[in-house]
Every structure is written in C-alpha cells, then in structure tokens.
Image 1: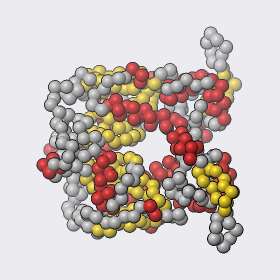
Image 2: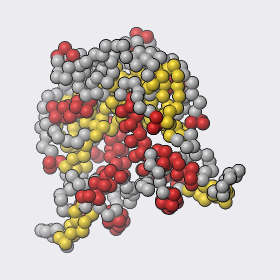
Image 3: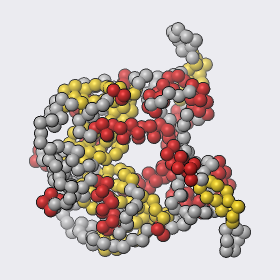
Image 4: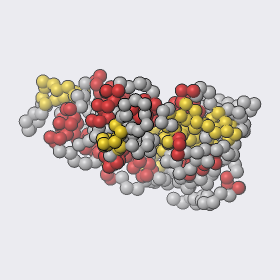
Length: 242
Length: 242
C-alpha cells in the first residue's frame, strides 16, 4: 500500500458532505467452490494499486451506465474467465474509509460452484487466480476478509434452511460424500448416525440399488436427489440441524 | 415530475464511464407495522422534487462521511421521528436510470414494529407521514414499489424460517391473535386447526391457565412465548408451512 488514504472526518463537514455525487460503487464476487472434500474460495492476486500484490476477492468499480448485477457478472468474467455462474446478492458494505481512493461502497455477490466445472484464468488486473481453502485465508485486500466472513455466515444460514448439493455432487453419491459437503460448509464434524437419520427424514433422497465401485472398503450404497422434492424445499425451506 | 431525467446510454461511452466517482448513494427504510389486525407500511409524502407530492418510502442520500447503516437510522429519524428501531439490510437496488438526478444506488433496510409503540411525525422533506395497509399501496415515487415488494418477499421468507410475534403481540395473546399476525404477513388465510397444530408442535408457546376477559364469545385461552426457545429458534431457524 503506497497510496495515501483519504480520511473523511468523523463529524459532518459541509465541504465533504454537500456534494453527494462523489462516490463510486463496486462489486465483489464471493465464489465458493467444492472439490468433493473441501470448501474453497476463489481469489485473485491484484496486479494494480491499491493493494497491488495482495490477494483479494474478484471485484472492481462498476460503470455509470451499468446495472449492478450486470457489473458483478462482468467483473467476475473479466478477472477470472468465469461466466454463466448464478450470482446472488448478499450484502452491501459501506463503512466510510474502506477504500483508499475515496468513498467506495461495495455490494457482495455470492455463488457456490463445483470447482471441476469451473476452469479459471487470470485476466485484466488479476495477476493470478486461484482457489484457496477457506481455513487458509487470513489476509486480504481492503475489507475483503470481513466480506468473506459475512458471506460464509450467509452460506451457513442458507444451508440450514434449504437443501444443497444438487450442483456440487456427482449425480449419484454416497451419504458420506453428502455429509462431507455439509461438514465443509458448516465447519464442524457431524455424527454419522445423526446425519443419516436427519438427512433421510427430510425425504429429499432416493435410495438406489447401486453401490460404489472400485473401493477398498465395503462399497457404500448410492443415492440421488429427488429432483422435484429438492426443488420444492429450495423454495419452501426446511430446517437442518445436526 | 417536472425534472428532466438524465438517461445514460445503454452502451458504454467513455465520457460517462471513465469518471467513476460520480455516483450518489441513498438508503430507503421499509418499516412494516402490525396493528393487531393488519400489516401496514410507513410512507412519507415528499415535499420536494423529484417526485414532489408522491408517497414514498422514507429515504434520502447519505453523506460522504457517513456509514450506510448510520445513514439509514439518521434518514428514518429525520423524516419520521422514528428512532431506536432495529434496521436490517435487505437488498441494494442499482438499475441505471432509477433516479432522475443521476446515478443513485440505494440500499433498502427493513424493520417490523408494533404500530402502537411507534409514534411518527413528518419532518424535513416529508410533508406527511402515515401507515398504509400494504394492499392499498399501488403507486410510489422512484422504484419504491419494486423495493417494497422485494422486502415483502423477504419478510415472508423470514417468517417461514424463524418465529415472529414477540415484539408485535401483547405479552399474553390468543392463538387467534397469533394466527392473524401470520396471515397478515403471509397474505393468505390459514386453516385454524392446521395453524394450531403446527404452531404448538414448534414448542415455542407456553399455555397459560388464563383466559380472555371481557369478550362476548367464549373466552379463548391465553399463551405467551417461551422466551428462551423463541430466541434459540430465531438464531437456528425452523420451517413454518401451513
């Protein structure tokens, strides 16, 4: 950080407060990815000031003539090559001195994707782009760590209130694979018996007469989602607590 | 509307897109109120252009040196006298031409209050302030009708996922009073038997050995919330569907 940060005074001053149209607006994309085992976050290494050389969420300022949701899709695509990802707005962050170049308010958009389906490559002001295990992220540009934490909380809340996994697991999966997904998102180990009881009682799974192949241990039974019930629960919600 | 609306071209133009710090940011407060029977929304009549004479959500631009959440509390207080209301951020609205004076992105904050506890009075650019039944609201300034609808959807979602009523009903209430609250928010009539079964199975109510007084019909039993369980469910969530 070589730039001198503009500090707005805590109390209102006419000179700074009168002209309202002096703000900029940005979007930051919080893309969670599941690789079958771990929950990861997509980060870029910034090749530009401010925070040049820092890892950051893929984000940028939006244009005056651009809708914010379109801006989020554009910024993600321009920096990481990712497109056609479902982006959901999470929260807007607007503390006064969060950006060194002036007053910049940012809206976080989140998505949860299967990493294998999402090849990424660095472009524009991204020098590198990479998936990081959530637990390994400790320092990010701007207030991006705070934004990441807020989105992580949101993701946990979502997972407790509606099913996940449809786009993240293979079409046929074992209960252990599903449990690993829930554990990765909720960040605590679960009791195998309780998890099974809970998830089966929700009636969103179809038990198949098929078993794992090519494993050293006793092959586990395969399941798939009941697509209709899954979709209904996504809309109506349910309560998950193990 | 006498002001000429600035229209940004759909395609990017250098002149308009290069200077990023030309935006303003506003907050709009979506205050839902319950009067024991109906769900209402707090609106102001604007005494200023743009949209002078129109009813609108209490909202205004925020200062350059003001955090957005502080801005929401200030704007609500300045326009309606309401303060110490718990405001929760809902969504940010940023389509390009939503404001006639330039690029203004707005964040909606919502609250759900008991109308009897919230006296209001018009101030600042509010000529009048009043509670309107949700069903009667059809025309509002800016994109406020769209914002109201989005917050209404959010409120319904919240009510399906966690208990409500603690701050909205008297400390002791009948199941009919609680049902009326759920019907007012979810906007559909519910079957009395199903509602009772569902709400009692959630284990958030304490059945009292007390009954209504001074009613013409057979007095109904009174209930109160189990405060501890209520709070736990607010945090953990549950699924409500009747």
